[in-house]
Image 1 (cartoon, rainbow, N blue to C red):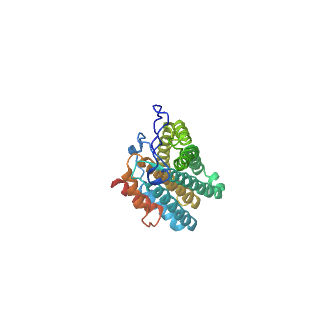
Image 2 (image 1 turned 90 degrees about the vertical axis):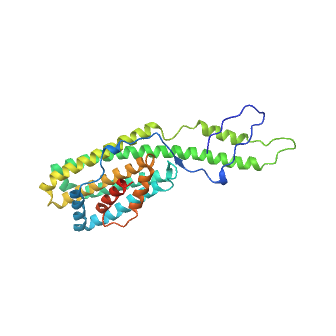
Image 3 (image 1 turned 135 degrees about the vertical axis):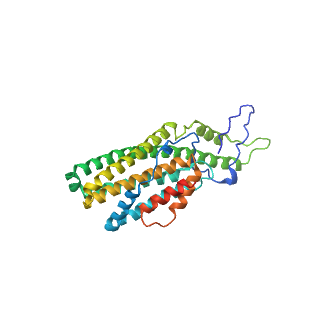
Length: 299
């Protein structure tokens, strides 16, 4: 819905145009100026990392359950972003889905870490890796907090629009006196409130998002490097296989989801391809990682 200019040239301002087809306004944001620097990085994990994760899933029923849940959440988040990308915008509901997905995935990792904390703290290398993961998780949580605040502000602005639409219907249906024009003063007042409302998604928000996304990619690269080195030393330890693989795959999923958010405002066809890939049944998130990567490259 566009923001009409105030008119002071007439005594009785003309009525604002009604919404098309009397439908509620789409709950979207758009940021065509947002750019992502993620193109300079690869988000595809190595074959060795994927094999390690798939082997760990086959050997651990708890990891199999974790993997199934992770696939479902990741696909749901990607699909929610892909819906309605005929315009370069993101729905507020899809962003809420992203927030919930990131928080839920992080909670699952924390649960597994706490279940194995005694063995983790006995091993300095694994303990350091967990510390790195927690540091990265704090950045993700900060982003989710900032996003939640933006969504609340956007919800307030949406409520102003809904009130304006309701006032318009009421005033439009009111019968004016003979020789008098209809009075749309209450509608115009709400539209003035809408004009005064600040954009809930500021450039600062997108700067924070870009920073978090970049740091997630760096964390994934660090995890891959450490995992490759320590797999030779600790590969036979069950707790190492479980914890390291869970941290690795969730970090990758977080990078993937944030990459899709970035693509939604810069390259929508990539999101469509990833959403199609997410709908394909996969043996594990490891298989999905390769599938998602190929789909993105093919666009």
